[in-house]
Image 1: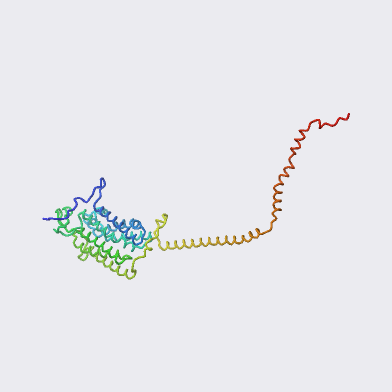
Image 2 (image 1 turned 120 degrees about the vertical axis):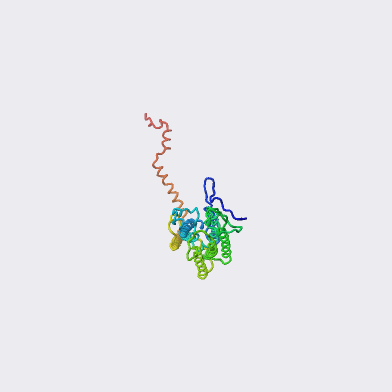
Length: 383
């Protein structure tokens, strides 16, 4: 009789009022939010612009989801294309089934597109995102608990997870307790995140080495956890396909760390992480670093020419002013007869009045004529 175990949820769906939300999808969403939040903080601390991680996540997350689903369907084709399989179920992502290898691979393609558009180095962004990605995996693994899937062999340890008969792949119809591999992997991912953060601070990892350390650390744990799982999987040379994938990826990550440390020691300069932001009209065009550098150079040349033209105009104006000053000074020193000039001015001002007076009749004479008695105007009487 089992004295202790981890119970599984009776249903893998949470009802938010009229909106149903599957537990698996909720874990994926929370993991993505955590990865973006932590990645943004680390990116800004390294010298990058705020908001860059969120912008690139618009490309990275959809690519990652598609890649994870494709990898799962290819490596586990039975439920979809085998006997009694339903091909349409390959699109039912909410029911579970995302391969981390495909998610990282295709998600990297989306991140590369976003980095090209922003003009920032992909390895530096990967270093900033590494701890957040592995923590997102730690959260996402609890989606397997909601779906009662991807557990290990039967066991009666106190931390075993109870699986009901409908989800028991060992003895269908019978409930049982199994190793909670989702819990093991979640705890391992938290440890890897702590390792990457510590090593990054201690050794100033750069040029993608923090990301490579995350990959190497994760594959070590995934290798032994994969051996415990009892779900259906493709086998190659007697070993699960995911084990072979873990081995190859681990070797590639270690080789990258060694080569990168020799060819690009240290960490990127913060100035190289600022990137370039194109105008809204050019947002639909892929970013071209060479073209951006040419545009900057052209702008600098144009500014230089404009400054030279302004200097030339200023010099011409100063020369003209210098030429006019001696002439003005010479005019100011010529002798002038002030009295003659004043009389001329008065005469000139009075001339119109004289002309006007000559043309107008003598009003005073007419008035005197009117006041003279009429007798005075008659001729003298001779008799």
